[in-house]
Image: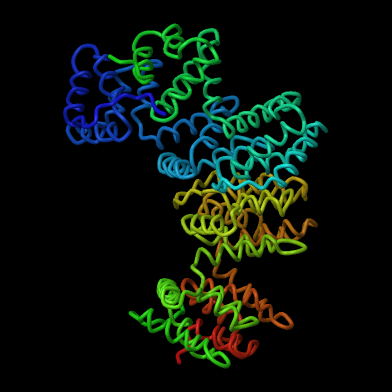
Amino acid sequence: MATLIFPEHPSPVADAEALRKACQGWGTDEKTIISILGRRNAIQRKLIRQAYEDMYQEDLIKRLESELSGDFEKALYQWTLDLEERDAVLLNVAIKQVPLPDYRVIVEISCIRSHEELLAIKRAYQIRYKHSVEEDLAQHTTGDIRQLLVGLVSVYRYKGDEINVRLASSEAEILHRVISEKAIFNHEETIRIITTRSKAQVLATLNHYKDDYGTSITKHLKDGSSHEFLFALRTAIRCICDHHKYYEKVVRRALNKPGTDEDSLTRVIITSAEKGLKDIKELFQKRNSMSLEHAVAKDTWGDYKAFLLTLLGKED
Amino acid sequence: MATLIFPEHPSPVADAEALRKACQGWGTDEKTIISILGRRNAIQRKLIRQAYEDMYQEDLIKRLESELSGDFEKALYQWTLDLEERDAVLLNVAIKQVPLPDYRVIVEISCIRSHEELLAIKRAYQIRYKHSVEEDLAQHTTGDIRQLLVGLVSVYRYKGDEINVRLASSEAEILHRVISEKAIFNHEETIRIITTRSKAQVLATLNHYKDDYGTSITKHLKDGSSHEFLFALRTAIRCICDHHKYYEKVVRRALNKPGTDEDSLTRVIITSAEKGLKDIKELFQKRNSMSLEHAVAKDTWGDYKAFLLTLLGKED
């Protein structure tokens, strides 16, 4: 469920005019920008961008980028892009991060988006970067990590809810054998199961694992020494099993980090405000005995804070 | 270019009636079946199946299966299915072949079909088998072969024609190094290049290879000892570079084999009759100083022969 509050039929032309005015003259009127863009859904934002372009022969996003700065600018930039463009940009930045790609973002987008959404993201990526996601990802990774990530981003999983119980049991056994042998050089079967089985089947297998071996697989996966790969694998498992719970953890850690991890905070709020952020808020409240709004208000400031709180559904 | 000859506006109802009559009574009228189905394009065949189902509450394909037999039945079965269903069935049979999957068919469909076609095939596969192609394929393969085939079938390649010449040169060098070191245990980079780069880029890289190292990569790939993998890799390269030439070779070998390899012959003719078979015929004529129709007529017989010749464009 979403947290975003938006009017039913705003006028894209009036919005574009107000945004233009907010960007003109000495200083920028951030408050107006937030009160408009922070209260429009994806289709409405797209219409505003089109109206703005038609009226002023200027890309609204470029204009905002030149007017704003810091975390607020980054958040507003992501928010104003089309959904598939935004994820394409997030993927590209994550893949090209130095010294190592940001596996978390790559896994999130691959495992949480639906197949149709992922397809649109990959199309947007190709149009924008004249490359495929897969080739860039494969070029910037090696070995098991490459196999895992390219598999997650490219395989078209079966979408049905049917479960093969015997298969779940036998593949739970395979996973347990590989993990207990600490055969860290051979994750082939683990990668096969996690990247190719349907989400329902992966879930059934992991439930079997828990029942048969007494603890969740993600706990067992912490023992190994190949940290990088195991981290990406645990992230994939969490995103497949319960991505709201996963996002709650990302937000909690981002806020608890000394200095706050704004990039992660922004990413979760921006990409969930129209889908799922209400569930994440509820989980956050339960887990931390504090509302997410309160925690965000405590650790952020200025326009960035005002914008995030608006997306979190704060009434004016 | 296609070889199939078909009328512009045949009546699906009249066709269904004639097919029904051909299947009724003592004996089957194969000639009529061929003269109708062998002269209809994919959309027309689909309409006939629908009309037949509406009129007789019976699946035309099941009826034909029960009336016919042998290679003729197999060919007509493949021909009467929707295009994406047909490839889904071919994939499934190839994956489950014992003792080893038929790598050739898997590679052909992955590399020759467009991304959109492949997507439709994967959807049809899921509907029919309640599994994904990828999970079945990964389950029936291991190691390098698994990585190569799952990569080919799942990666969404960049479709543009732009080429990065420096990249082509450096990746040709990588391929040459791996091949000359006979590092048959590590095909990771080869798999990355062949499965993730755009077809235009793979072609540029292979041209560089030829220019820089004096011979085509497929010749060099014959030296290794890991036959199975190298065979699949060579097939992939051929399908990506020039699939008409590749198909001509498949047909030539199928016909030259003692006893004829009917499955391969059927597959190429059925899947190309509406797209590309004319080009394959021309290549065949050039390479063998004999027309494909003549070669087929020489090595096949009965209804099977009559049907293939009809698809090859033989006038009544």
